[in-house]
Image (cartoon, rainbow, N blue to C red):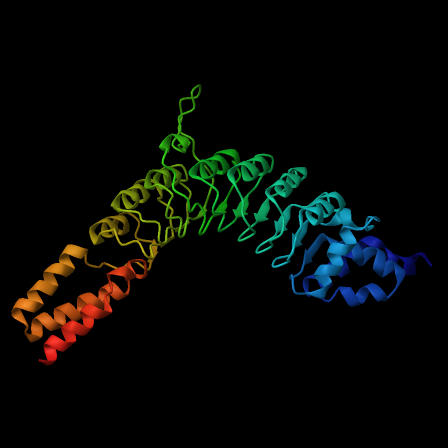
Length: 356
């Protein structure tokens, strides 16, 4: 009899059910027996991934916001519920109250909650992953108050137009375990007072040493109002960087030189829309780091060069000048951030002059 009971040990059954969870076929197994349910339900509650348009998402929110606490809600550590509208402040409070042990939280493209709701996330002392991309209007005060209490390793948010460079500095300085930091399309207000920027290139008063961070992934795409000095300070303070996205940031050779000096382990660099960088600076970077992959860098003309080519075409009007002008216009068409240079009227007038 003892020999047959060994197959009913909860530890052995849980081990088997974990494989079903990996294959995402655990849910039907809950109906095999009460024992299977008691062993399988806690496993299901550890990781919940839903979409806002999924009826199960609405049912989950109603469950965690109800008066009666779900029996296995304390097991939940990984919650993803993107595109859920509206995710009100009251619903966030219900999630925090009912599921106190979350370490991975994804509210991407969820709107409907206020900045004050972010303060509720302070209740997660072990929060390591947070995704708030495109989740409404967020400001420095709410984000700084929330971030300072969490040991974040990965933080993503986008289109937070009310943040400033001060917040960028705050999160990088307040999260020593941070590995991935992404703020695409954020910080879209101009800061006229550079004194607000807490420079990342700081020297500890008592230790007299530069502060180096553990960040390996930085994404500043379309952060046009982040000063180049702040970007350089961030790069200098993150010597372990492996992935860096500076698309449409308005940087110059100054940033490329900082990358050459500070980022010896960088493997990926995206320079789309960065029109103020020279080929010489890129060549120097590649010579120092031959393993780097640089994406979307286009060596194009500056406006004075284009004007010179147009003048040459109008005065010479020969086959060589036409070919040169066509190539220059083609180069400029690849610069998405400088589309205002493209003048259809000018192009038509050039074509008409050639016909005549």
